[in-house]
Length: 78
Image 1 (spheres, one colour):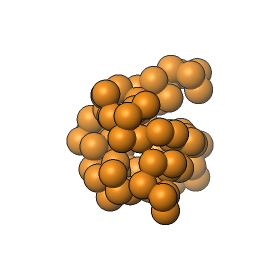
Image 2: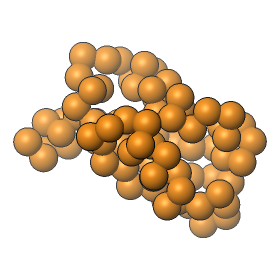
Image 3: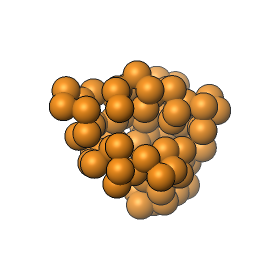
């Protein structure tokens, strides 16, 4: 698994989102996801939304994914 594939999966699963993904060892990754659909949701719900875009890859091909989730306003982009 690579960061670019993870980014594509997240952005496809959360239309209108923007993801930045890093990870050098192929199994541990960090992602920053900006998505207005996170508005009004607690961090756990936001993380579940991102994990859902990755499906069974979580815990398999992707051993760990550290997340930072923001709306555009929270990210200072709006």
